[in-house]
Length: 308
Image (spheres, rainbow, N blue to C red):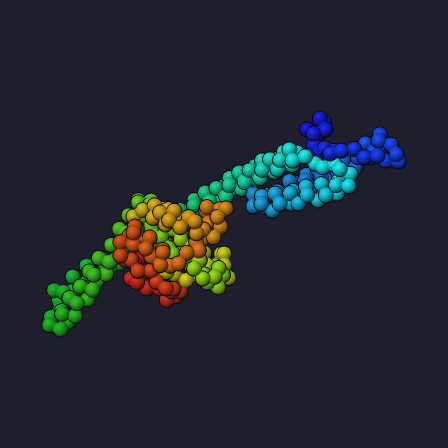
């Protein structure tokens, strides 16, 4: 387009020092100067394009186009719209390239984070099971010792021992149940918790993060989020235990897609939406479940949050 002299046009000729030829030469020199300046500025604008600033770079090129043509008005020369569109198309291609790089980088980061999180979950489960197995052995040993003593005891001592044995059996039953639950979570890779949390001091009112975790204690994940990304602790509105946590998380994200705080990054889990709307969606997928107004991690009650 530049070689064909289609990048700029001279709308009509002028005379310079009573010479049409000199006027034409002057117009051509001025048009080339304006065009070169415009092109250099556009090159710089495009070189600074990133995956997050297409709109601002687009506006800068349009502004530069307007300024350049205004400068050429006295000379009756202007840069063509076709050339402008060509440079805008180039900007779009560069933006798409950087966007793809950003997506791949984000995908890689999320993949690494998921692997790290899953490894952490597995280690947590293994340590939990080992601890419960150790407790199982200890309580079984204490029960065997108590059973041996029963034959030698009478009256009040016997009754006390029976009560102690009953407490040992109940605790042993709880330990076994907790161990089996942990083993079940290790095998059912989609079971976990969906959490709904907020941070008014950091993000303002009605901004909620909806995410999921497979940790045995989901509060550990909430604590990590508070320690890593914001200066203030998160407040808890709901922690929902379910067999398919990724699916519930996905359904809630879809329901509030238009309310995403970061519309350019679908991997961000923050939504600007009233808690009442979240409540309705949770009830739609989980049945009766009451979200809380707000509660700090220190104040949480597992039964109130539906974690049992």
